[in-house]
Length: 245
Image (cartoon, rainbow, N blue to C red; front, side, top):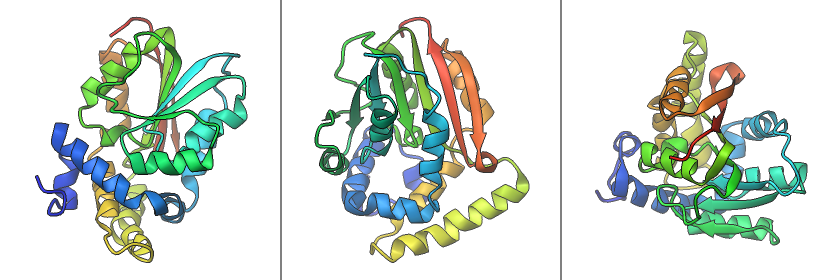
């Protein structure tokens, strides 16, 4: 499917190689203005959600952490500031996003790669996290398998993502903002607002939070924390991996 002709609804339903190519093209295109537009679109809430989701992890000295889909590195840098004793790397499929991350964190460790084929050995991380990226993965099941594979037994998987609020009132507000307002805000900075139409559709088509919990448990993960933020617009799950995938 041609990236230039894929509309936002079609993009939210892509999978495998078609979605992989779309994501690379999309994020490379918006990388230079990604942080600013996200700040405006979500009114600073993503940084608030990072603080809520990542500040109570109690990481130990020399724990190894991988930030999957690290983008421009905000979550990676936040963990480094909170837990300077850990070893953290950032992985992303977009070279454009990684270029920004490396400029903002010149001492950081970032590498290009695909969550469906992570170039790291089995059982080498104590924590794998992915923030606001899961719905963008080309193959959700394969991505989960890979993140479990690189976790040591007893290691933790943290998923922080956008969710479609279940409250009818919050849904009305959220849908209006994401479908009608967010693309107009983005349009002040970029000519093509398709990525932000895709963003809204991808969140609406995301699994419900309770179904996401079930997905993790079906993989044999033990969910030990589940938190919703801002009326259910964002949520965090932490699961323990007691076996290798």
